[in-house]
Image 1 (cartoon, protein in one colour):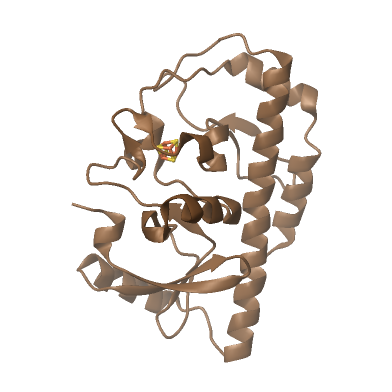
Image 2 (tube, protein in one colour):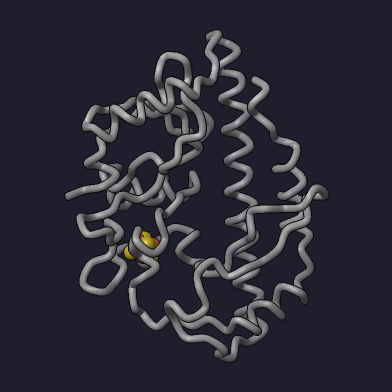
Length: 234
Ligand code: SF4
């Protein structure tokens, strides 16, 4: 499948792992982010969706069951039979856009929360250059939530760096495995990516029809049938 390109991802993973610690510490110190418990980052209005790595999914299923999950939005592919494919799960949201686990101003699963929630707001700029070099950035606007310019000691910075690198390389590794798996699956079954089918199914989906989404989890695809109600609960 020509549409599937993976070279850049491998380089980006290397770039993440080898990103100089001193430079990253400097960025964390300059931002000096401190949570003010406003809860904005736990809403889809502010953060769109909480993408889960396979380990997150496993931990959350064991703790709370699979009902809190949905296929991550923005499906990567749609085959010529109208089935969508996406690289992982996300957490469901409640009516009003709060995360399914955000209740009464707190996270119900704080001790086992997804890795992306642990590292937020320290995330990577996705647009690596041609050599796979990456830039760090703070994902949200500087004055939209939280406190800034707090003192963050060396030990805390190093912990943040360890977890950010784990998440970002884990995210890309999952994406890479997904792309290989989709390519193999399409080749094996003579399927092809169809943008026309993608658009048609999405139009129907918005009008209330269910769609079939294959979610990549632990090296295989899990079939999910979803309706717009799961994405935008009323
Ligand atoms: S899992 Fe917890 S920390 Fe993460 S978005 Fe949901 S409520 Fe917030």
